[in-house]
Length: 291
Image (cartoon, rainbow, N blue to C red; front, side, top):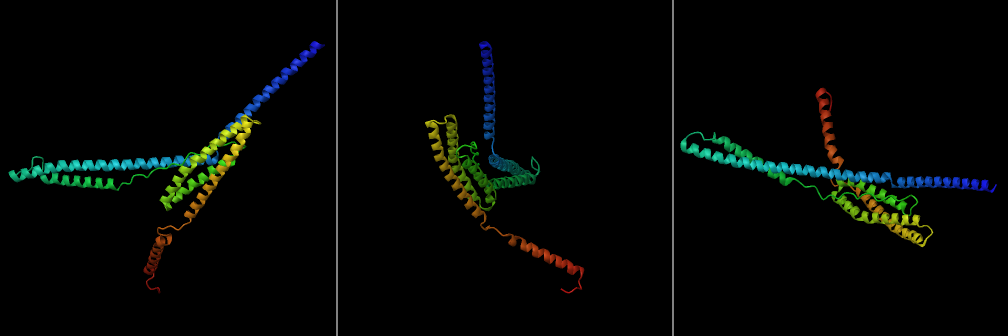
């Protein structure tokens, strides 16, 4: 009887061990799924990265177009100078030959070579002028990469997400501001380039402290990590407030009047001209009608 009881107890223990192992594997899968989900970039992070990639691609196109125009102007200058020098030399020799022998020059009529020299000189002058008027692309300040994404339960995750949204809004403000006031847009880019990395470093600290809290719960190290995370979160919150103030000032700048010509100044003459044209057509169709 005792043997049967020991066998039943052993089977129950093995079954319980298998159930516990299955539960542990299931929990590991859930933890891995949560970690993978937390590492996926949010919509704001994807948009911020897309804005950065778009800005980098635009700058590269501008640099390539500038280099292409500069090379074209250089080739035109060098080629025109060479043509002017060779054709001018041959033309002068033909003039001397024609003056001394009263015959057509050795290499053909002198006027043909002198005309080619003039064309080459004009081409060289135009190439040199075009090269001087080219404007090189300005200093490129690409947006900083989006920060790390913290777990939803981590201390400072709300501030981290807020910072990402604020930086995305700032990048979107730069598009109309570039047309309104390029100097102010460049200043905003410089400020974001200097302010974003320290705030991103705070988020990296929060990620490390959150890992310490999860791996060492109930210990003095875990408690110290929690207190340190709260302090870092406060500094990150101050940085977000500063970004909000920067966005407020940017919105005020966007609402400022444009110093260029207004739409009334541009469209009013066209409207008056079209009205006068329509009146003239009516008069031409009905010359006897009163004014």
